[in-house]
Amino acid sequence: MSGYPSDSSGHVSGSARLRADAQLNRDRIIQAARELVRLPGELKLHAVAKACGIGQGTLYRHFPTREDLLAEVYRHEVDALVAAAPRLLETHEPVEALAAWFARVAAYARVKRDVFAAVEASTGRNLAAHSLGPIGEAVEMLLAAGRDTATIRPDAEARDVIVLISWLSRLDDTELDARGPRLLGILIDGLRVRAG
Image 1 (cartoon, rainbow, N blue to C red):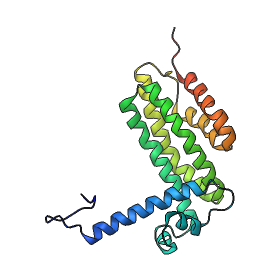
Image 2: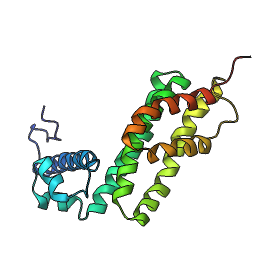
Image 3: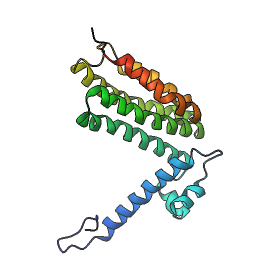
Image 4: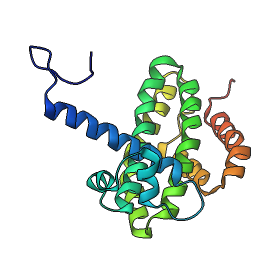
């Protein structure tokens, strides 16, 4: 099995292989940029291409500018964070799902901080504006599941949670490592319904 679409004779079409290879390259570029943006100094596209083992022409076909690449790194992180909410609810009780989702929020906060520091302010504002809706919907899904089981306080709103977790992206790595889990634990405790 090649993983590529094939015709009835089992032969993989050239265009299908090209599309799959292009997607693989795109994914590798995004992952490399996600790791490299954390390093001091400006993210260089040639460094991303080198880290992926691809030519600069291939990188530029996917991402013509540094801002395009960084915006996609951020969108990719938002998509992963949002997609995690329903998956966690399938395998965890609501409060535990919310706690596990918060653990992912810390990684998202790092990427958000690093990307927003590397792009122009207007790009950062656009990215933030477009991600607020999907992230808010994911938070609301988790909160609603907890309200339905009477484990999350009924007055908790998605916007409350977003305001509180937004501070994580303002912490440097040392503080995020030291304080992030504790801060998120305090937030979970504050969202729980108190017995009695």
